[in-house]
Image 1 (cartoon, chains in turn cyan, red, yellow):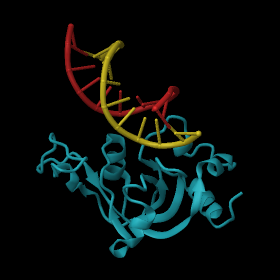
Image 2 (cartoon, protein in one colour; image 1 turned 90 degrees about the vertical axis):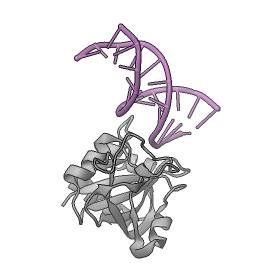
Image 3 (spheres, protein in one colour; image 1 turned 180 degrees about the horizontal axis):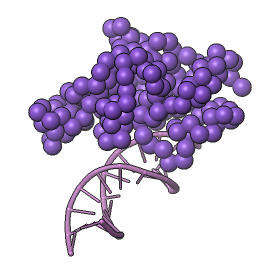
Length: 156
DNA sequence: GCCAACGTTGGC
DNA sequence: GCCAACGTTGGC
């Protein structure tokens, strides 16, 4: 059992969009970074915990708890010529890009970056590190526990 | 819109 | 394999 933080731009897929989907489950399309892909391929397992994070928006931060509900498989958008995620160099025999299905367990309050940064014990959370751009990052169990506790409290 | 940080590409 | 140029991410 591992824990992850997964970024989504709410303009594309917000936590509300995911909640509105059948079974509150969405295919995590559009990962086009090898390190993030390899996390899904090599280390993610069904049942892993996920922090649903909104990026590139007015209030970036954690907005929900989710879980991984499928093994990784080929991301169909890489074969869709009309998709911004189309990759002409990928083939169906050897798909380059993968996805997993993610199910929202519950929407939470927005735990924004300033509050995350101000929380003792989260200094090493990868998403807070300067220059971090990875859309999928592993989350330490102690960070996971701390964040879940924070989400149950009022903003500080 | 700006820009720092990082990833990718491609010439050599 | 090196590394400069370029593209992307994402907070502000």
